[in-house]
Figure 1 (cartoon, rainbow, N blue to C red):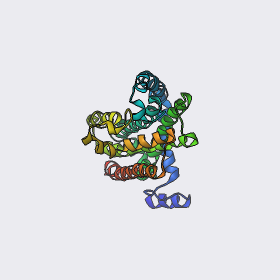
Figure 2: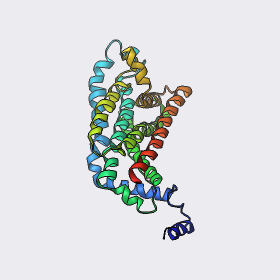
Figure 3: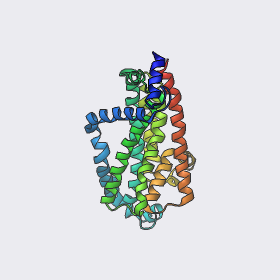
Figure 4: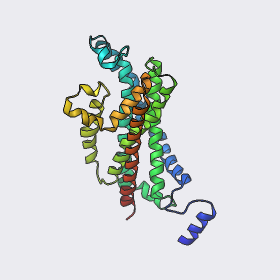
Length: 281
C-alpha cells in the first residue's frame, strides 16, 4: 500500500512523502488562513488600532514634551521629531510581539491539544511541509502588521525616506520571524503553557522597552548596551528607522539584514529538529 501511494505520488508529479512540496505547504498555509478568517476580530486591535493609539499617545502626546526639550535634537537627530523616531521602532517591536505570540499557543495547541499537525502527517504532508506552511502564515500575519503601521505612519506624515520606506515591510517580517522561529521551536517541546509567560515577561517585554524602540540604546547603562546590540530587535528597529528617516547606509543596513536572516535561518533549523521529535514518534 505504501509503495502504491508512493508510485501514485510520483506519477502525479508530486515529491515523495517526507520531501518538501510547495503545494502541500500551501495547504498548511491555507489551513492557518482559514483559522484566522474565523478569529481575525480578536487581532483587530493589535493589527490596525494599536498603531493609531500608540503613535497618537506616545508619538504626539508624550512626543510633544520630548521634542520640545532642549536636548531632543541631539538625541533623535536634527529636525527629527520624537514621533518620527518612535514610529519605525514601534513597527519593528510590534512585529516582534506578533511573531512571538503566533508561535506560542497556536503551535503548542496544534501539537498537544488539537493534534492538528498529527492529522496533517497522516496525509502525504511532511514535517517540512508543516514548517514551511506555518512560516508562510507567520510571514503573512507579520506583513499585515507592518503594512498597517506603515500606512498609519504615511498618514501622520512620519515617513521621510522616500520609496525605500516600503522595505520596512519585509524588515518587519524578518524581525518577527527571528522570534517566531525560535519560539516555535521551543513551543514544540512543551506540554503546557507555563513557559510562555516567562518568555513574554523576561524576554519580549524587556526587548520591547530597551532595544532602541523608545530611545537610542546609547542612553542605556554602559553594561547593557552590548547586550542590546546583540538582539534581533535592535537590528530590526535600527534598519526600519533608517529606512523611514532616509538615513540608510549600505554597509550597516547589510549587517542588520544579515543578522536577522541568520537568526531566522538558525531558528528554522531548530524547528526542523523539535517538530520532528514532537510529531514523529
